Amino acid sequence: MTEPVLYLDGVSVVFDGFRALNNLSLIVDAGELRAIIGPNGAGKTTMMDVITGKTRPTAGVVRFREHDLTKLDEASIATLGIGRKFQKPTMFDALTVFENLELALKAPRGPFSCLRWVLSGEARRRIEQVMEEVGLAARAHDRAAILSHGQRQWLEIGMLLMQDPELLLVDEPVAGMTDQETEHTAALLVRIAGRRSVVVVEHDLEFVRALGSKVTVLCEGSMLSEGSIDHVQNDPRVIEVYLGR
Amino acid sequence: MTLRLVLVGAVLVLAMLPALNRLPADSALHVSDFIVSVTGKWITYAILALAIDLAWGYAGILSLGHGAFFALGGYAIGMHLMRLIGPRGVYGHPVLPDFMVFLGYQELPWYWLGFDHFPFAILMAVVVPGLLAGVVGYLAFRSRITGVYLSIITQALTYALMLAFFRNDMGFGGNNGFTDFKELLGMPLNTPTARSALFYASLLLLLGALWLCSWVARSKLGRVLVAIRDAESRVRFLGYDVTQHKLFVFVLSAMIAGLAGALYVPQVGIINPGEFSPGNSIEAVIWVAVGGRGTLVGALLGAFSVNALKTWLTTVAPDLWLFALGGLFVAVTLFLPRGLIGLFSKAQK
Image 1 (cartoon, each protein chain N blue to C red):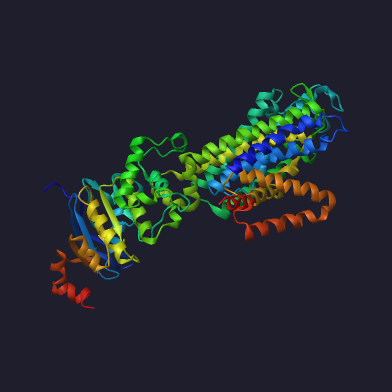
Image 2: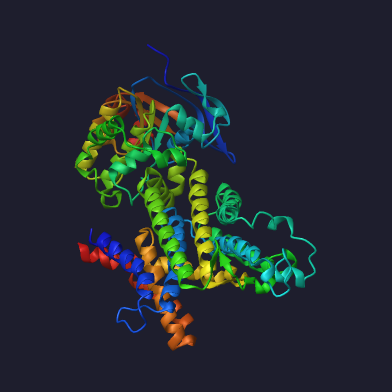
Protein backbone atom coordinates (compact mmCIF):
# COMPACT_ATOMS: atom_id res chain seq x y z
CA MET A 1 0.00 0.00 0.00
CA THR A 2 1.12 3.55 -0.67
CA GLU A 3 1.89 6.20 1.91
CA PRO A 4 -1.11 7.24 3.99
CA VAL A 5 -2.65 10.58 3.01
CA LEU A 6 -3.29 11.65 6.56
CA TYR A 7 -1.21 10.55 9.49
CA LEU A 8 -1.86 11.56 13.09
CA ASP A 9 0.30 10.12 15.85
CA GLY A 10 0.12 10.81 19.58
CA VAL A 11 -1.75 14.09 19.09
CA SER A 12 -2.84 15.93 22.22
CA VAL A 13 -4.56 19.28 22.54
CA VAL A 14 -4.88 20.86 25.96
CA PHE A 15 -7.06 23.92 26.57
CA ASP A 16 -6.54 25.34 30.07
CA GLY A 17 -5.89 21.92 31.51
CA PHE A 18 -8.77 20.28 29.62
CA ARG A 19 -7.55 17.53 27.29
CA ALA A 20 -9.65 17.94 24.14
CA LEU A 21 -7.47 15.39 22.37
CA ASN A 22 -5.48 12.80 24.28
CA ASN A 23 -2.76 10.87 22.47
CA LEU A 24 -4.91 10.39 19.36
CA SER A 25 -3.60 8.41 16.41
CA LEU A 26 -5.33 8.07 13.06
CA ILE A 27 -4.26 6.93 9.60
CA VAL A 28 -6.31 7.61 6.48
CA ASP A 29 -5.24 6.02 3.19
CA ALA A 30 -5.49 7.44 -0.30
CA GLY A 31 -9.02 7.17 -1.64
CA GLU A 32 -10.39 5.99 1.69
CA LEU A 33 -13.76 7.00 3.10
CA ARG A 34 -13.63 7.16 6.89
CA ALA A 35 -16.40 7.90 9.34
CA ILE A 36 -15.63 9.34 12.77
CA ILE A 37 -18.25 9.00 15.48
CA GLY A 38 -18.28 9.73 19.16
CA PRO A 39 -20.34 11.38 21.87
CA ASN A 40 -20.39 15.16 22.27
CA GLY A 41 -17.06 16.47 23.49
CA ALA A 42 -15.18 13.43 22.21
CA GLY A 43 -12.83 15.71 20.28
CA LYS A 44 -14.20 15.25 16.75
CA THR A 45 -14.30 18.93 15.87
CA THR A 46 -10.98 19.60 17.64
CA MET A 47 -9.42 16.88 15.49
CA MET A 48 -10.71 18.64 12.35
CA ASP A 49 -9.35 21.94 13.69
CA VAL A 50 -5.93 20.39 14.20
CA ILE A 51 -5.84 18.99 10.67
CA THR A 52 -6.88 22.30 9.09
CA GLY A 53 -4.47 24.37 11.16
CA LYS A 54 -7.12 26.21 13.15
CA THR A 55 -5.84 24.70 16.39
CA ARG A 56 -2.22 23.82 17.16
CA PRO A 57 -1.64 20.48 18.89
CA THR A 58 0.13 20.58 22.23
CA ALA A 59 2.00 17.41 21.28
CA GLY A 60 2.13 14.85 18.51
CA VAL A 61 2.66 14.46 14.77
CA VAL A 62 0.16 15.62 12.10
CA ARG A 63 1.19 14.88 8.54
CA PHE A 64 -0.53 15.25 5.18
CA ARG A 65 1.58 13.20 2.77
CA GLU A 66 5.07 14.54 3.49
CA HIS A 67 3.89 17.92 4.85
CA ASP A 68 4.01 18.69 8.57
CA LEU A 69 0.66 20.38 9.16
CA THR A 70 1.59 21.65 12.61
CA LYS A 71 3.90 24.17 10.93
CA LEU A 72 1.45 25.54 8.34
CA ASP A 73 -1.35 28.10 8.56
CA GLU A 74 -4.94 27.56 7.45
CA ALA A 75 -4.54 29.09 4.01
CA SER A 76 -1.46 27.05 3.08
CA ILE A 77 -3.10 23.86 4.34
CA ALA A 78 -6.14 24.62 2.19
CA THR A 79 -3.95 25.14 -0.88
CA LEU A 80 -2.09 21.87 -0.17
CA GLY A 81 -5.35 20.13 -0.95
CA ILE A 82 -7.34 19.75 2.26
CA GLY A 83 -10.90 20.99 1.96
CA ARG A 84 -13.21 21.32 4.94
CA LYS A 85 -16.96 21.55 5.02
CA PHE A 86 -18.26 23.20 8.14
CA GLN A 87 -21.47 22.21 9.90
CA LYS A 88 -23.22 25.39 8.90
CA PRO A 89 -23.14 25.77 5.14
CA THR A 90 -21.98 29.19 3.98
CA MET A 91 -22.32 30.18 0.39
CA PHE A 92 -23.20 33.25 -1.60
CA ASP A 93 -26.97 33.57 -1.53
CA ALA A 94 -27.17 36.29 -4.16
CA LEU A 95 -25.32 34.14 -6.69
CA THR A 96 -26.59 31.12 -8.60
CA VAL A 97 -25.42 27.55 -8.05
CA PHE A 98 -23.31 27.83 -11.19
CA GLU A 99 -21.75 31.14 -10.08
CA ASN A 100 -21.00 29.80 -6.61
CA LEU A 101 -19.10 26.90 -8.15
CA GLU A 102 -17.39 29.21 -10.63
CA LEU A 103 -15.97 31.27 -7.77
CA ALA A 104 -14.64 28.11 -6.16
CA LEU A 105 -13.00 26.89 -9.38
CA LYS A 106 -9.22 26.83 -9.37
CA ALA A 107 -8.25 29.93 -11.36
CA PRO A 108 -6.17 33.08 -10.86
CA ARG A 109 -7.67 34.95 -7.91
CA GLY A 110 -6.52 38.57 -8.38
CA PRO A 111 -8.95 41.41 -9.19
CA PHE A 112 -7.53 41.99 -12.68
CA SER A 113 -7.62 38.31 -13.58
CA CYS A 114 -11.22 38.17 -12.36
CA LEU A 115 -12.11 41.22 -14.42
CA ARG A 116 -10.73 39.65 -17.60
CA TRP A 117 -11.96 36.15 -16.77
CA VAL A 118 -13.77 34.39 -19.57
CA LEU A 119 -15.43 31.08 -18.83
CA SER A 120 -13.66 28.50 -20.98
CA GLY A 121 -15.38 25.40 -22.30
CA GLU A 122 -13.17 23.32 -20.06
CA ALA A 123 -14.14 25.33 -16.97
CA ARG A 124 -17.81 25.08 -17.89
CA ARG A 125 -17.53 21.30 -18.27
CA ARG A 126 -15.78 21.03 -14.92
CA ILE A 127 -18.55 23.02 -13.21
CA GLU A 128 -21.25 20.98 -14.96
CA GLN A 129 -19.51 17.79 -13.96
CA VAL A 130 -19.47 18.83 -10.29
CA MET A 131 -23.13 19.94 -10.46
CA GLU A 132 -23.94 16.51 -11.87
CA GLU A 133 -21.88 14.84 -9.14
CA VAL A 134 -23.66 16.61 -6.29
CA GLY A 135 -27.07 16.38 -7.98
CA LEU A 136 -27.69 20.08 -8.58
CA ALA A 137 -27.54 20.18 -12.39
CA ALA A 138 -31.23 21.07 -12.59
CA ARG A 139 -30.73 24.01 -10.23
CA ALA A 140 -27.73 25.52 -12.05
CA HIS A 141 -29.29 28.93 -12.55
CA ASP A 142 -31.23 29.20 -9.31
CA ARG A 143 -29.91 31.51 -6.67
CA ALA A 144 -28.38 29.73 -3.69
CA ALA A 145 -30.82 31.56 -1.40
CA ILE A 146 -33.76 29.47 -2.62
CA LEU A 147 -32.11 26.06 -2.23
CA SER A 148 -33.38 23.62 0.39
CA HIS A 149 -31.24 22.77 3.42
CA GLY A 150 -30.00 19.57 1.83
CA GLN A 151 -29.24 21.20 -1.49
CA ARG A 152 -27.23 23.89 0.29
CA GLN A 153 -25.09 21.19 1.91
CA TRP A 154 -24.48 19.60 -1.48
CA LEU A 155 -23.60 22.92 -3.05
CA GLU A 156 -21.09 23.44 -0.26
CA ILE A 157 -19.61 20.00 -0.96
CA GLY A 158 -19.59 20.92 -4.66
CA MET A 159 -17.65 24.11 -3.89
CA LEU A 160 -15.06 22.01 -2.07
CA LEU A 161 -14.85 19.61 -5.02
CA MET A 162 -14.21 22.52 -7.41
CA GLN A 163 -10.97 23.11 -5.53
CA ASP A 164 -10.07 19.51 -6.27
CA PRO A 165 -8.85 18.59 -2.78
CA GLU A 166 -7.01 15.35 -2.06
CA LEU A 167 -8.56 15.12 1.36
CA LEU A 168 -12.06 16.26 2.18
CA LEU A 169 -13.16 16.81 5.79
CA VAL A 170 -16.92 16.82 6.19
CA ASP A 171 -18.46 17.88 9.48
CA GLU A 172 -21.97 16.57 10.24
CA PRO A 173 -23.27 16.69 6.69
CA VAL A 174 -26.73 15.26 7.36
CA ALA A 175 -27.80 17.18 10.44
CA GLY A 176 -31.34 18.39 9.81
CA MET A 177 -31.75 16.52 6.55
CA THR A 178 -34.76 14.46 5.50
CA ASP A 179 -34.27 10.68 5.13
CA GLN A 180 -34.17 10.98 1.38
CA GLU A 181 -31.59 13.77 1.51
CA THR A 182 -29.51 11.72 3.96
CA GLU A 183 -29.51 8.77 1.56
CA HIS A 184 -28.52 10.99 -1.32
CA THR A 185 -25.70 12.49 0.74
CA ALA A 186 -24.35 9.06 1.69
CA ALA A 187 -24.32 7.99 -1.96
CA LEU A 188 -22.65 11.28 -2.87
CA LEU A 189 -19.83 10.84 -0.35
CA VAL A 190 -19.25 7.23 -1.39
CA ARG A 191 -19.00 8.40 -5.00
CA ILE A 192 -16.56 11.18 -4.12
CA ALA A 193 -14.24 8.88 -2.16
CA GLY A 194 -12.01 6.72 -4.29
CA ARG A 195 -10.67 9.62 -6.28
CA ARG A 196 -9.87 11.39 -3.01
CA SER A 197 -9.90 10.62 0.70
CA VAL A 198 -12.93 11.67 2.68
CA VAL A 199 -13.26 11.95 6.46
CA VAL A 200 -16.83 12.33 7.71
CA VAL A 201 -17.76 13.29 11.26
CA GLU A 202 -21.32 12.32 12.04
CA HIS A 203 -23.74 11.46 14.86
CA ASP A 204 -26.29 9.65 12.73
CA LEU A 205 -25.45 5.93 12.86
CA GLU A 206 -27.88 4.96 10.10
CA PHE A 207 -26.03 7.36 7.86
CA VAL A 208 -22.65 5.95 8.88
CA ARG A 209 -23.96 2.46 8.11
CA ALA A 210 -25.03 3.66 4.67
CA LEU A 211 -21.49 4.88 4.03
CA GLY A 212 -20.28 1.28 4.51
CA SER A 213 -16.83 2.51 5.46
CA LYS A 214 -14.35 1.92 8.21
CA VAL A 215 -15.48 3.65 11.40
CA THR A 216 -13.36 5.28 14.11
CA VAL A 217 -14.99 5.87 17.49
CA LEU A 218 -13.58 8.72 19.54
CA CYS A 219 -14.16 9.17 23.24
CA GLU A 220 -12.63 11.77 25.56
CA GLY A 221 -10.05 12.72 22.98
CA SER A 222 -8.72 9.24 22.21
CA MET A 223 -9.55 6.45 19.82
CA LEU A 224 -11.84 3.95 21.50
CA SER A 225 -12.43 1.50 18.71
CA GLU A 226 -11.92 1.12 15.00
CA GLY A 227 -13.33 -1.21 12.35
CA SER A 228 -16.51 -1.90 10.42
CA ILE A 229 -19.76 -0.49 11.71
CA ASP A 230 -20.81 -3.94 12.92
CA HIS A 231 -17.50 -4.39 14.70
CA VAL A 232 -17.73 -1.13 16.59
CA GLN A 233 -21.40 -1.52 17.38
CA ASN A 234 -20.61 -4.81 19.08
CA ASP A 235 -17.53 -3.55 20.89
CA PRO A 236 -18.47 -3.58 24.62
CA ARG A 237 -16.46 -0.42 25.35
CA VAL A 238 -18.31 1.44 22.62
CA ILE A 239 -21.65 0.18 23.85
CA GLU A 240 -20.81 1.35 27.32
CA VAL A 241 -19.77 4.94 26.53
CA TYR A 242 -21.80 5.73 23.50
CA LEU A 243 -24.34 3.37 22.06
CA GLY A 244 -25.69 2.04 25.30
CA ARG A 245 -27.05 5.35 26.45
CA MET B 1 -35.45 44.97 -21.52
CA THR B 2 -38.05 47.68 -20.91
CA LEU B 3 -35.62 49.17 -18.43
CA ARG B 4 -32.97 49.42 -21.11
CA LEU B 5 -35.43 51.17 -23.44
CA VAL B 6 -36.32 53.65 -20.70
CA LEU B 7 -32.61 54.27 -20.16
CA VAL B 8 -31.91 54.89 -23.84
CA GLY B 9 -34.95 57.19 -24.01
CA ALA B 10 -33.77 59.13 -20.97
CA VAL B 11 -30.29 59.59 -22.44
CA LEU B 12 -31.79 60.83 -25.74
CA VAL B 13 -34.01 63.32 -23.94
CA LEU B 14 -31.01 64.55 -21.93
CA ALA B 15 -28.91 64.83 -25.09
CA MET B 16 -31.56 67.06 -26.69
CA LEU B 17 -31.73 69.57 -23.83
CA PRO B 18 -28.84 71.86 -24.92
CA ALA B 19 -30.16 71.84 -28.51
CA LEU B 20 -33.66 72.80 -27.34
CA ASN B 21 -32.02 75.58 -25.30
CA ARG B 22 -30.90 77.17 -28.60
CA LEU B 23 -34.48 77.47 -29.88
CA PRO B 24 -36.00 80.95 -29.75
CA ALA B 25 -37.33 81.79 -26.29
CA ASP B 26 -40.95 81.94 -27.47
CA SER B 27 -40.83 78.42 -28.96
CA ALA B 28 -43.00 75.84 -27.18
CA LEU B 29 -40.04 73.47 -26.98
CA HIS B 30 -37.56 76.02 -25.63
CA VAL B 31 -35.62 74.88 -22.60
CA SER B 32 -34.31 77.54 -20.24
CA ASP B 33 -30.64 78.09 -19.37
CA PHE B 34 -31.52 77.13 -15.82
CA ILE B 35 -32.79 73.70 -16.86
CA VAL B 36 -29.64 73.00 -18.89
CA SER B 37 -27.24 74.05 -16.18
CA VAL B 38 -29.12 72.32 -13.38
CA THR B 39 -29.40 69.10 -15.42
CA GLY B 40 -25.70 69.24 -16.25
CA LYS B 41 -25.00 69.43 -12.53
CA TRP B 42 -27.32 66.47 -11.83
CA ILE B 43 -25.46 64.40 -14.40
CA THR B 44 -22.25 64.85 -12.45
CA TYR B 45 -24.15 63.87 -9.29
CA ALA B 46 -25.39 60.78 -11.10
CA ILE B 47 -21.79 59.83 -11.90
CA LEU B 48 -20.93 60.20 -8.21
CA ALA B 49 -23.93 57.99 -7.39
CA LEU B 50 -22.66 55.34 -9.83
CA ALA B 51 -19.28 55.39 -8.11
CA ILE B 52 -20.88 54.94 -4.69
CA ASP B 53 -23.13 52.18 -5.97
CA LEU B 54 -20.18 50.24 -7.36
CA ALA B 55 -18.45 50.24 -3.97
CA TRP B 56 -21.53 49.94 -1.76
CA GLY B 57 -24.08 48.05 -3.84
CA TYR B 58 -21.63 45.43 -5.10
CA ALA B 59 -18.74 45.18 -2.63
CA GLY B 60 -20.68 46.33 0.45
CA ILE B 61 -18.22 49.14 1.16
CA LEU B 62 -20.45 51.87 2.55
CA SER B 63 -18.36 55.00 2.17
CA LEU B 64 -19.77 58.05 3.90
CA GLY B 65 -16.92 60.13 2.55
CA HIS B 66 -17.22 59.84 -1.20
CA GLY B 67 -17.94 63.56 -1.38
CA ALA B 68 -14.26 64.01 -0.52
CA PHE B 69 -13.14 62.31 -3.75
CA PHE B 70 -15.68 64.35 -5.70
CA ALA B 71 -14.43 67.56 -4.06
CA LEU B 72 -10.75 66.69 -4.66
CA GLY B 73 -11.50 66.22 -8.35
CA GLY B 74 -13.28 69.57 -8.24
CA TYR B 75 -10.31 71.25 -6.58
CA ALA B 76 -7.95 69.82 -9.21
CA ILE B 77 -9.92 71.37 -12.07
CA GLY B 78 -10.49 74.45 -9.92
CA MET B 79 -6.72 74.97 -9.67
CA HIS B 80 -6.52 74.79 -13.45
CA LEU B 81 -9.37 77.31 -13.81
CA MET B 82 -7.64 79.64 -11.35
CA ARG B 83 -4.40 79.45 -13.31
CA LEU B 84 -6.29 80.31 -16.50
CA ILE B 85 -7.56 83.56 -14.97
CA GLY B 86 -4.01 84.85 -15.29
CA PRO B 87 -3.64 88.62 -15.10
CA ARG B 88 -7.43 89.14 -15.28
CA GLY B 89 -7.71 88.84 -11.49
CA VAL B 90 -8.64 91.77 -9.28
CA TYR B 91 -4.98 92.30 -8.31
CA GLY B 92 -3.82 91.72 -11.88
CA HIS B 93 -0.88 89.51 -10.85
CA PRO B 94 0.39 87.64 -13.92
CA VAL B 95 0.75 84.27 -12.17
CA LEU B 96 -0.66 84.23 -8.65
CA PRO B 97 -4.41 83.88 -8.09
CA ASP B 98 -6.04 86.73 -6.16
CA PHE B 99 -6.19 84.93 -2.82
CA MET B 100 -2.45 84.25 -2.91
CA VAL B 101 -1.66 87.89 -3.60
CA PHE B 102 -4.00 88.82 -0.75
CA LEU B 103 -2.27 86.35 1.60
CA GLY B 104 1.16 87.65 0.63
CA TYR B 105 2.48 84.65 -1.37
CA GLN B 106 5.62 85.52 -3.35
CA GLU B 107 5.45 82.58 -5.71
CA LEU B 108 3.23 79.60 -6.55
CA PRO B 109 3.50 76.76 -4.02
CA TRP B 110 5.19 73.70 -5.59
CA TYR B 111 1.95 71.69 -5.62
CA TRP B 112 0.37 74.25 -7.93
CA LEU B 113 2.97 73.57 -10.61
CA GLY B 114 1.64 71.84 -13.69
CA PHE B 115 -1.95 72.87 -13.13
CA ASP B 116 -1.71 75.41 -15.94
CA HIS B 117 -1.96 72.37 -18.25
CA PHE B 118 -5.46 70.97 -18.71
CA PRO B 119 -4.41 67.30 -19.19
CA PHE B 120 -2.34 67.47 -16.00
CA ALA B 121 -5.29 68.89 -14.04
CA ILE B 122 -7.61 66.15 -15.34
CA LEU B 123 -4.98 63.54 -14.53
CA MET B 124 -4.74 64.88 -10.97
CA ALA B 125 -8.55 64.86 -10.69
CA VAL B 126 -8.28 61.08 -11.11
CA VAL B 127 -4.93 60.31 -9.49
CA VAL B 128 -5.30 62.26 -6.23
CA PRO B 129 -8.67 60.73 -5.23
CA GLY B 130 -7.36 57.34 -6.38
CA LEU B 131 -4.22 57.63 -4.27
CA LEU B 132 -6.10 58.80 -1.20
CA ALA B 133 -8.60 55.95 -1.57
CA GLY B 134 -5.70 53.59 -2.11
CA VAL B 135 -3.92 54.56 1.10
CA VAL B 136 -7.03 54.76 3.30
CA GLY B 137 -8.52 51.62 1.75
CA TYR B 138 -5.31 49.63 2.08
CA LEU B 139 -4.97 50.45 5.77
CA ALA B 140 -8.65 49.80 6.48
CA PHE B 141 -9.17 46.66 4.41
CA ARG B 142 -5.89 45.10 5.47
CA SER B 143 -6.95 45.49 9.11
CA ARG B 144 -10.32 43.99 8.13
CA ILE B 145 -12.24 47.10 9.11
CA THR B 146 -15.70 46.69 7.66
CA GLY B 147 -19.28 47.83 8.02
CA VAL B 148 -20.10 50.77 10.21
CA TYR B 149 -16.47 51.20 11.33
CA LEU B 150 -15.36 51.76 7.78
CA SER B 151 -18.22 54.20 7.25
CA ILE B 152 -17.11 56.19 10.29
CA ILE B 153 -13.52 56.31 9.05
CA THR B 154 -14.56 57.61 5.64
CA GLN B 155 -16.83 60.14 7.30
CA ALA B 156 -13.93 61.31 9.47
CA LEU B 157 -11.73 61.51 6.36
CA THR B 158 -14.00 63.94 4.57
CA TYR B 159 -14.50 65.96 7.75
CA ALA B 160 -10.74 66.21 8.29
CA LEU B 161 -10.24 67.31 4.70
CA MET B 162 -12.95 69.92 5.12
CA LEU B 163 -11.18 71.38 8.17
CA ALA B 164 -7.84 71.30 6.35
CA PHE B 165 -9.17 73.03 3.25
CA PHE B 166 -10.75 75.74 5.41
CA ARG B 167 -7.24 76.79 6.44
CA ASN B 168 -5.79 79.67 4.47
CA ASP B 169 -2.22 78.35 4.79
CA MET B 170 -3.13 75.19 2.84
CA GLY B 171 -2.88 77.26 -0.33
CA PHE B 172 -6.34 76.36 -1.61
CA GLY B 173 -8.13 79.63 -0.95
CA GLY B 174 -9.40 78.81 2.56
CA ASN B 175 -13.11 79.10 3.16
CA ASN B 176 -13.68 81.09 -0.04
CA GLY B 177 -12.25 78.32 -2.18
CA PHE B 178 -11.98 79.10 -5.87
CA THR B 179 -14.43 81.07 -7.98
CA ASP B 180 -14.66 83.82 -10.59
CA PHE B 181 -13.45 81.42 -13.29
CA LYS B 182 -13.06 82.91 -16.75
CA GLU B 183 -12.54 80.19 -19.30
CA LEU B 184 -11.77 76.52 -19.93
CA LEU B 185 -9.99 75.15 -23.01
CA GLY B 186 -10.30 78.57 -24.63
CA MET B 187 -14.09 78.70 -24.12
CA PRO B 188 -15.39 81.58 -22.03
CA LEU B 189 -17.50 80.00 -19.28
CA ASN B 190 -21.12 81.02 -18.74
CA THR B 191 -21.86 81.10 -22.45
CA PRO B 192 -24.34 78.76 -24.17
CA THR B 193 -21.44 77.09 -26.03
CA ALA B 194 -19.54 76.34 -22.83
CA ARG B 195 -22.72 75.17 -21.12
CA SER B 196 -23.52 72.75 -23.94
CA ALA B 197 -19.95 71.52 -24.16
CA LEU B 198 -19.76 70.82 -20.43
CA PHE B 199 -23.22 69.25 -20.53
CA TYR B 200 -22.24 66.85 -23.32
CA ALA B 201 -18.89 66.12 -21.69
CA SER B 202 -20.76 65.17 -18.50
CA LEU B 203 -23.23 63.03 -20.42
CA LEU B 204 -20.38 61.24 -22.19
CA LEU B 205 -18.60 60.65 -18.90
CA LEU B 206 -21.85 59.33 -17.44
CA LEU B 207 -22.20 56.83 -20.28
CA GLY B 208 -18.53 55.91 -20.02
CA ALA B 209 -18.78 55.40 -16.27
CA LEU B 210 -21.95 53.36 -16.69
CA TRP B 211 -20.23 51.18 -19.26
CA LEU B 212 -17.16 50.74 -17.04
CA CYS B 213 -19.20 49.94 -13.94
CA SER B 214 -21.41 47.44 -15.80
CA TRP B 215 -18.30 45.78 -17.16
CA VAL B 216 -16.97 45.35 -13.63
CA ALA B 217 -20.39 44.28 -12.31
CA ARG B 218 -20.90 41.64 -15.00
CA SER B 219 -17.40 40.21 -14.85
CA LYS B 220 -16.38 37.50 -12.46
CA LEU B 221 -14.91 40.31 -10.37
CA GLY B 222 -18.46 41.63 -9.92
CA ARG B 223 -19.53 38.25 -8.58
CA VAL B 224 -16.50 38.11 -6.27
CA LEU B 225 -17.49 41.55 -4.95
CA VAL B 226 -21.06 40.43 -4.31
CA ALA B 227 -19.67 37.37 -2.56
CA ILE B 228 -17.45 39.61 -0.41
CA ARG B 229 -20.46 41.77 0.42
CA ASP B 230 -22.48 38.76 1.59
CA ALA B 231 -19.86 36.50 3.21
CA GLU B 232 -16.40 38.06 3.29
CA SER B 233 -14.67 35.37 5.31
CA ARG B 234 -15.99 32.63 3.05
CA VAL B 235 -14.42 34.38 0.04
CA ARG B 236 -11.13 34.50 1.91
CA PHE B 237 -11.51 30.80 2.62
CA LEU B 238 -11.84 30.15 -1.13
CA GLY B 239 -8.37 31.64 -1.49
CA TYR B 240 -9.23 35.14 -2.73
CA ASP B 241 -7.23 38.07 -1.38
CA VAL B 242 -10.23 40.11 -0.26
CA THR B 243 -8.11 43.18 0.50
CA GLN B 244 -6.97 43.43 -3.13
CA HIS B 245 -10.48 43.12 -4.51
CA LYS B 246 -11.95 45.71 -2.16
CA LEU B 247 -9.05 48.05 -2.78
CA PHE B 248 -9.50 47.74 -6.54
CA VAL B 249 -13.17 48.68 -6.44
CA PHE B 250 -12.69 51.42 -3.83
CA VAL B 251 -9.92 53.11 -5.83
CA LEU B 252 -11.85 52.80 -9.10
CA SER B 253 -14.90 54.26 -7.42
CA ALA B 254 -12.89 57.19 -6.00
CA MET B 255 -11.40 57.93 -9.43
CA ILE B 256 -14.84 58.04 -11.05
CA ALA B 257 -16.04 60.33 -8.26
CA GLY B 258 -13.01 62.60 -8.83
CA LEU B 259 -13.78 62.94 -12.54
CA ALA B 260 -17.39 63.74 -11.72
CA GLY B 261 -16.21 66.51 -9.42
CA ALA B 262 -13.93 67.85 -12.18
CA LEU B 263 -16.95 68.28 -14.45
CA TYR B 264 -19.13 69.64 -11.68
CA VAL B 265 -16.96 72.62 -10.75
CA PRO B 266 -16.79 74.39 -14.14
CA GLN B 267 -20.58 74.07 -14.39
CA VAL B 268 -21.38 75.57 -10.99
CA GLY B 269 -18.49 78.05 -11.17
CA ILE B 270 -17.26 77.58 -7.60
CA ILE B 271 -15.53 75.09 -5.31
CA ASN B 272 -15.04 75.61 -1.60
CA PRO B 273 -14.43 73.41 1.46
CA GLY B 274 -18.19 73.08 1.96
CA GLU B 275 -18.07 70.39 -0.72
CA PHE B 276 -16.20 68.20 1.80
CA SER B 277 -18.95 68.50 4.38
CA PRO B 278 -20.07 65.08 5.65
CA GLY B 279 -23.67 65.97 4.83
CA ASN B 280 -22.87 65.98 1.11
CA SER B 281 -21.48 62.46 1.24
CA ILE B 282 -24.46 61.20 3.19
CA GLU B 283 -26.86 62.81 0.76
CA ALA B 284 -25.11 61.05 -2.12
CA VAL B 285 -25.51 57.72 -0.33
CA ILE B 286 -29.22 58.49 0.06
CA TRP B 287 -29.55 58.99 -3.71
CA VAL B 288 -28.23 55.48 -4.19
CA ALA B 289 -30.44 54.01 -1.46
CA VAL B 290 -33.52 55.71 -2.89
CA GLY B 291 -32.78 54.60 -6.45
CA GLY B 292 -31.84 51.05 -5.48
CA ARG B 293 -28.31 49.92 -4.73
CA GLY B 294 -26.50 47.18 -6.53
CA THR B 295 -28.21 47.93 -9.84
CA LEU B 296 -26.22 50.90 -11.27
CA VAL B 297 -29.31 52.16 -13.13
CA GLY B 298 -30.98 52.55 -9.74
CA ALA B 299 -28.18 54.87 -8.66
CA LEU B 300 -28.83 57.09 -11.69
CA LEU B 301 -32.55 57.08 -11.06
CA GLY B 302 -32.00 57.99 -7.42
CA ALA B 303 -29.55 60.80 -8.19
CA PHE B 304 -31.89 62.42 -10.72
CA SER B 305 -35.12 61.99 -8.79
CA VAL B 306 -33.82 63.08 -5.37
CA ASN B 307 -32.07 66.10 -6.88
CA ALA B 308 -35.14 67.06 -8.89
CA LEU B 309 -37.12 66.89 -5.66
CA LYS B 310 -34.46 68.94 -3.90
CA THR B 311 -34.40 71.64 -6.58
CA TRP B 312 -38.18 71.91 -6.51
CA LEU B 313 -38.58 71.75 -2.73
CA THR B 314 -35.77 74.19 -1.91
CA THR B 315 -37.56 76.66 -4.17
CA VAL B 316 -41.09 76.29 -2.80
CA ALA B 317 -40.33 75.40 0.85
CA PRO B 318 -36.60 75.58 1.64
CA ASP B 319 -37.05 74.78 5.34
CA LEU B 320 -38.67 71.46 4.59
CA TRP B 321 -35.87 69.96 2.52
CA LEU B 322 -33.84 68.25 5.26
CA PHE B 323 -36.99 66.81 6.80
CA ALA B 324 -38.07 65.55 3.41
CA LEU B 325 -34.66 63.99 2.77
CA GLY B 326 -34.63 62.25 6.15
CA GLY B 327 -38.21 61.11 5.71
CA LEU B 328 -37.42 59.81 2.24
CA PHE B 329 -34.51 57.77 3.55
CA VAL B 330 -36.61 56.25 6.33
CA ALA B 331 -39.49 55.53 3.97
CA VAL B 332 -37.29 53.85 1.39
CA THR B 333 -35.54 51.77 4.02
CA LEU B 334 -38.87 50.61 5.47
CA PHE B 335 -41.04 50.21 2.39
CA LEU B 336 -38.74 49.98 -0.62
CA PRO B 337 -35.63 48.10 0.48
CA ARG B 338 -34.70 47.64 -3.18
CA GLY B 339 -35.29 51.31 -3.94
CA LEU B 340 -37.32 52.86 -6.73
CA ILE B 341 -35.83 50.40 -9.20
CA GLY B 342 -37.46 47.62 -7.19
CA LEU B 343 -40.83 48.94 -8.35
CA PHE B 344 -39.80 48.48 -11.97
CA SER B 345 -38.50 44.95 -11.68
CA LYS B 346 -41.59 43.92 -9.71
CA ALA B 347 -43.77 45.38 -12.44
CA GLN B 348 -41.75 43.46 -15.00
CA LYS B 349 -42.53 40.08 -13.43
